[in-house]
Amino acid sequence: MKPNTRNSLILALLAVLMVATRVNHWTPIPDASWAVFFIGGFYLRTWTRWAFPLLMALAVAIDYAVITRQGINFWEHYCVSAAYWFLVPAYFAMWAGGLWVSRNYSRSWRTLGLTAVALIGSVALCQLLSQGSFYWISDSVQDKSFAGWAANYFEWLLPYLRTTATYVGIATVVQAIAASASKADKPLPAPNDHNQR
Image (cartoon, rainbow, N blue to C red; front, side, top):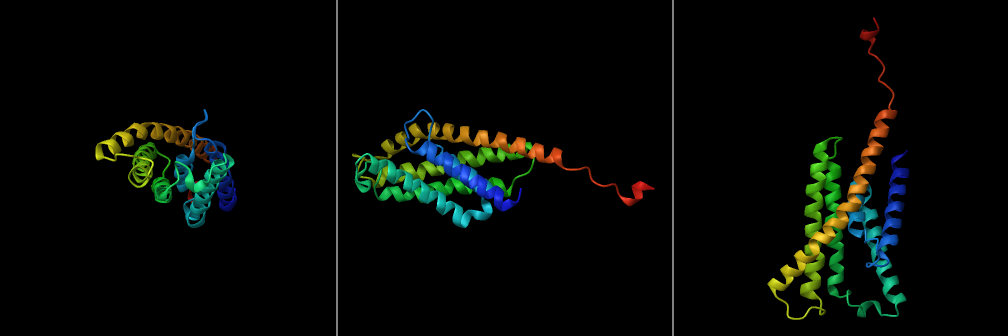
């Protein structure tokens, strides 16, 4: 498959996954947005300049559609404030984690370790930016304190990490299967001239 065709397919699948899971953050199927950006960073590294903004715009469009469909003004919703725009660097932290794994990728167990490290670091930073900005900037939180922020940060960190790791884990299994299949499909190398004597 040609790289552009492959990237287009991956981008479309990631967009569908985001739409299917982000439309309601409280459905039994958890929101895959953080994983979408991590996986996008891994597979769409050469398309970062426009694929990241496209997925970011899709995330905002979904939020806008969901909120306004409820008859609520987008800018008056509980989750929307000046802190909402911190989702851009927060989601880019996820994308950057995927980029880092992509740049260091090899078909080895080492890559699994790198993926785990990048995933934990990306989720921790994404949570810091998204939750931290909401906590400190939004008017929705009263009586702000460092202890209150830390308690809230760690309360939500593990659930977000678990959800993101589940989706990334599935993508990792698919990647391993695809890599094995492509390796098996490769023809045996032609023998060297000196071996034919």
